[in-house]
Length: 207
Image (cartoon, rainbow, N blue to C red; front, side, top):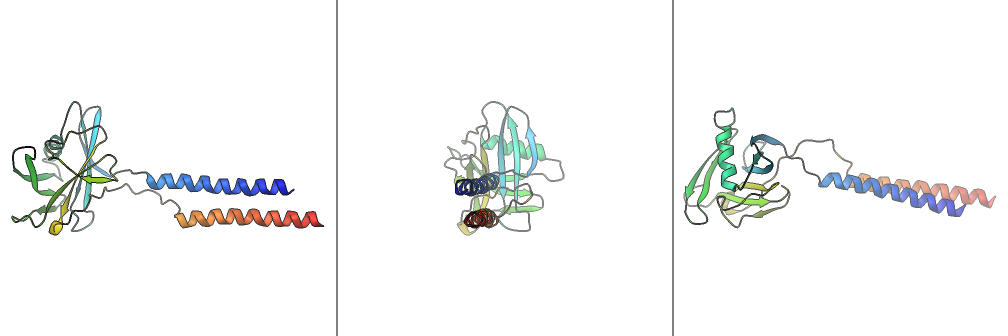
């Protein structure tokens, strides 16, 4: 009887861990809320524009399909051209510095929001790259030098007063997964319940 009881405890604990692991995977998934998809082709890259100020929503994501070799500048040009004449055109202004940096955006406008850097560069648009839309690093090259790869992410966020903050990818609203604390309580309850059964079986065996 003790052997069976221990097996039950182990099974209950394993089941709780499986539930916890499956929900943890759900927390790690990302489904971006895409404003529009521009272009066609076998490769796809993503563009995130985060104003970091103003009314919600502040951040927007776009998808760009293409074939062949394309740069971050190609993606931005395609999104601006493809959205022209629509209800929500994406527009940007830039300064061409030449060299590897080439163009650098001075301002972006979309969905009634518009931010342009001041002439003294006390605030500016910062350029970011990512492989998954979650972990971002500041770009080491300009958008016209940055070569896109399938699944790559480019992002721009407004560095107010020179403080750079990674873009926030807007997500599709999904059914809320149980909170980690809830899962912990579930595991504890499962183990506690198993313990009650063990004690009852031992008491019965003692009779």
